[in-house]
Length: 229
Image (cartoon, rainbow, N blue to C red; front, top):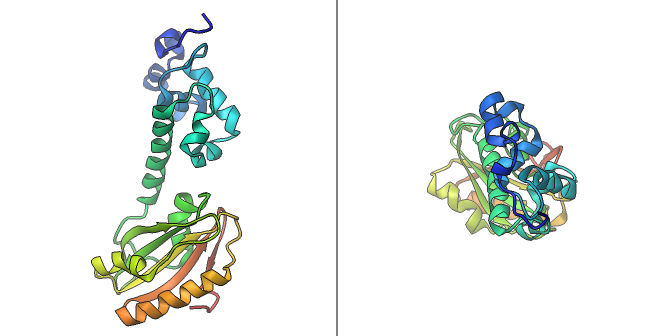
């Protein structure tokens, strides 16, 4: 029996995640049950609920599961390539849903609204990611575009790539945003230099760089607020 691969049908009906969801609603499912729904089937000698619990125990919390790469997820016994892909996709959908809470066309009031918009998207990333917000003349949001993903310590932000979405969207101005995986949003020397380059490039293109905002897990740094832009 230890080598048997368990499926959801091996669980009592009252413990099956899908039946539980139908009976009590998704809001009343445990984290273990929600993960089990994504995983769908257990491994050798373990039910899907046991596998979900092992996944939680291995990483400690949902945030660590969210930021794990495919190879890290596959280290959990019973999590194969296909299941690891589904787990990553589920978290990414959640991020996109959160990002879309700020509707295109809404006015960006200041750096705090940008922080609230992107903190769940990039605040916990292990690598720096560079985004650009394209705005109208009244600071209404046209689009949010990911420009690049850098290394653990440096973003890749060439003016050509940064301004391309703004040019395509006929934006009047932009806000550039990137994260610091270290958790410290204070700008580095590279950040200061990049900001200067982008501001100068924006003047040539006739696109105003309104702000450069560095996002961490819990707070942010605004170049505009500090008089650096």
